[in-house]
Image 1 (tube, each protein chain N blue to C red):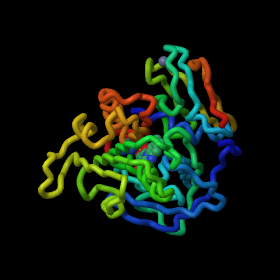
Image 2: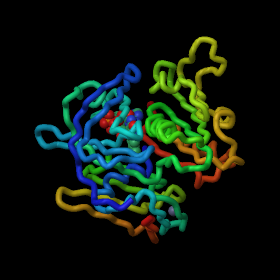
Image 3: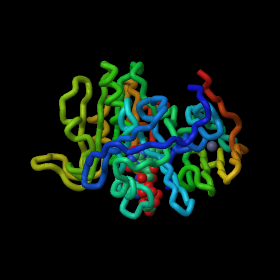
Length: 88
Length: 240
Ligand SMILES: Cc1cc2nc3c(=O)[nH]c(=O)nc-3n(C[C@H](O)[C@H](O)[C@H](O)COP(=O)(O)OP(=O)(O)OC[C@H]3O[C@@H](n4cnc5c(N)ncnc54)[C@H](O)[C@@H]3O)c2cc1C
Ligand SMILES: [Zn+2]
């Protein structure tokens, strides 16, 4: 059972100073673009050491993976072509 | 909305209100709180004496104060603590406000359709309250699906007539006396009659259990709504 990318807002706010859920991401699997908030997020509750996986709602490709360890965070974006981050 | 990276803040519970037999509204005092937009949420972190800690997300239910409404999930780790154990004067850690996409701003001009399943009413109530507070004229329609009449949150407030805010209730398990719609899950017909038609190009906000949100978003698309105008927030497994 998944939630959506809104749930990444808190964990990503630990890393970025702008809200990343409003960013438009393009999927490396199918090319679909949409807000990070609209991705399907699987895994533990936010911030768990096990981490969170965000999949494209169009093709299920893993677009973003976030793992939080005690001293560092790993952000894997290899399934994302680009992120357009609004800086209004 | 540039700002510094978010830190955990200490929040003190200052007021409690029962919404239903299994949900309560918690008002917190959070020194230095920067304010927030309707629809945003916070992450709550609980840490046990042995250092084990866990986090959950909760929507802010009002635009002008740090207030959450939490539904007790029977075998849950965090919600039974928040709904049954936490007392006024107790403190917990909270990070927010977060989420810049599932938000409604009082400057919004488009009509608004809100569709809530169970506790999914929480961030949508913040939008209704933000509209009221701003003296807004944007027309709102709310469809609120609850299990039974006594499972509705904010019932007295939503019962008061409010010009420009149209409320439709749906019940999935038990209905009030004399209610014509039999209990059941939301259908396309319910959405069609309770929401703004697609031609009005409304902004649609859908929130609740994942299955509910999925079903309603599909219905809105089938009714011709532009997917880019449909914003969703999934709370997790079906239940509420
Ligand atoms: C962005 C966001 C905003 C949220 N806002 C709110 C809010 O305003 N109010 C609110 O009450 N909740 C809200 N939630 C849900 C909340 O974060 C927790 O998932 C919920 O309180 C259950 O946590 P728990 O620790 O009690 O249960 P867990 O220990 O996580 O789960 C225990 C059991 O309950 C099931 N379960 C988990 N979540 C739910 C659920 N939502 N409904 C039914 N069964 C469930 C699990 O599958 C598991 O079997 C929100 C979630 C997200 C992602
Ligand atoms: Zn894709």
